[in-house]
Amino acid sequence: MACLRKVQQFFYRAVVISVLLISAGCSSFAAPDDPADARAMRDFAQTMAAQHGMDANAVEALIRDEAAHQQSIIDAISNPAEALPWYRYRAIFLTDERIDAGIAYWNEHRELLDAVEDRYGVPAEIVVAIIGVETQYGRYRGRHRVLDALRTLAFAYPPRADFFRSELEAFLILTNEEGIDPRTPLGSYAGAMGVPQFIASSYRAYAVDFNGNGRRDLFSEPADAIGSVGNYFARHHWRAGAPIAQPAQIEGRVDEDLLGGDLKPRHVVADLTQQGVRTRRPLAADEPARLLALETRNGPEYWLTLNNFYVITRYNHSPLYAMAVYQLAQAIKAKRR
Image 1: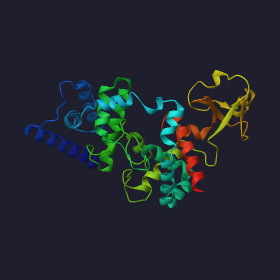
Image 2: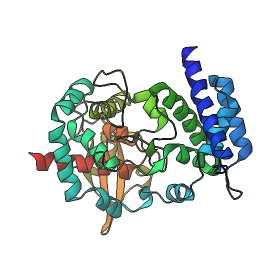
Image 3: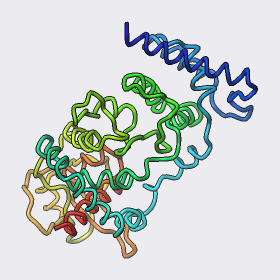
Image 4: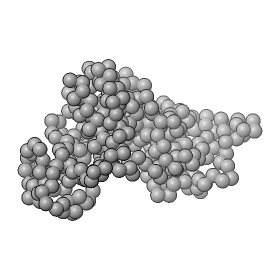
């Protein structure tokens, strides 16, 4: 009951603020050309009331009047970097500046990274590379209000409206749980937030209070940000000490069937070896694996990706993303020695 009262009190305050803005002649009501689905917003608010005990009018006022449609968000999600060829995508993340900054971040947080590796089995270089790819070690966390991003995508982006409505639901619950004003967090165009860029559902499910201060703070507590990345990977079945990926060569013609399907390894090394796939280092014959082709300026580049590579894709469902994290991690580790 106490939690319910907190939720209702917060949304009551949101409504009061909206009323004050309207009475002052500076209402932030949706503009006439706002493409958001008003009926869907009303239905969403009623669902939040029915399922979570929130005030439907207050929820509707928050997402209709306090949040704003942002066309730049629609534009960004329609043209993700993951659509680039690998050689261009790689160039974004594998830079001397990002590698050197990764070394500095590792040195600054060495004890935390060691503790996270001890608890979760995830190597320091992988955690550092994730944070490096996501926010350049916390320096660039996004410029969109999370509330605006989720409102825009939930009600004006039909291809993934259901997903982003569920994220908006998680975000409103999360901000109440963590004592955050939902109008203040900034993040990516997809609503990811904090140093490690967790979406709201991941924040609720995988963020940890690693420093034990009673809060899960991914915005300003390095311990929580680093620990939460480790926990995320562990919960997605990271195998400590296991390989991630290896460069591969193909003897003969490539069987296109080996390159299709989802990102999860669906063959074993022995089967791929019989198909002419060779790696520089031996792998266990029964190791689950997937053949990946990356586009370079000189033709395809082949890799054998393994379970831990698949775990990286649970953070971002893109093989380009996972390979960028892996190669950045390797580069940081090699240069730090």
